[in-house]
Length: 444
Image (cartoon, rainbow, N blue to C red; front, top):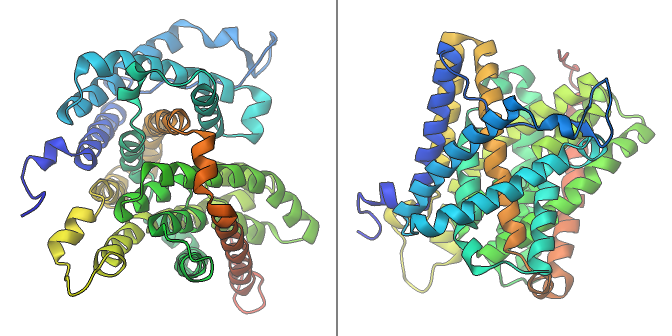
């Protein structure tokens, strides 16, 4: 049977990302529960260019002994794991290691830039990672010796597996049917609408790009794009385009959506839920929700967390749909084996991590311990994502993006889809949370 060889478990990117994510999760769990060692990754505090006796600290204050040790730990953990993973995929360690060192140093610069006090308030590190990569690739160019480390999907798949531990099914109970109605009913409708609009109205031939952009718009941006891109066999250029558009408009919505919500006088819980259902990135959701207050932030994060659970289900559905319908030709039938081959295996790791946190660690050790573990794991997830976003920038050329725009059809697909998403989400929010029909829940 094609691709069914047992060696796939240690030679294919999806499985290797799962094992690397699992190793980091397990070590993180042991470090927190036993207290035997500190597994925390490097994280820069917010800083100003000038000295200050108060927070945030100056830039120079970031370079201290504690951060030096964390830099060493983070670079070694990620460097060793990704080097082994790349070697098992056929990339020589002698070529990967020097390339990874330079990529990691670029990622460090990105994290430092994004930690600057003013920039940190408005733009996530994802934007700066993409921007720095784009500047390099579109000016001096990317040297051949650096390309072995530019493995966008490998890094982000690993980050998604780690992210699975933070996706708790208990979040559904906190917001109950309200969150499900906003996140789980609206999302599939938006995907179906964008698919129809892109393939039937705009007549776009690149169907993997259509479904990837539709999912990025309706679920959670880059994370969903990676999962569905793998399920639909989207090209790397399709993924780069979907991610770039998603990030640009996420920034705009993160800044302007809270302002508009305040202007029209929506309640905090309604405004936060609208943000959680329409702003793509989880980090941007937190920032935008905070602008409306504590209750709005809680509602925004809960809706987005419930929405994030859909990543695996949607990827599986897309794998089945593309294998059995989109790419079906003539009398060719597609068996379960083809669906399995197409299914992004790292989603299994995402689900297992989520189930482990939700139904094993939290019941046995408590929510506080799960939170402490997530504090450790979040930084490894962020570093994996920074490596991925930097790689996307390094692997993207503006001329290639212009060619992919298909006369503006891609942009129209996103704009019309996002407007539909906002309108439908706003209706669901009004229906469930305005108090007109259902009682308004109380959030802590």
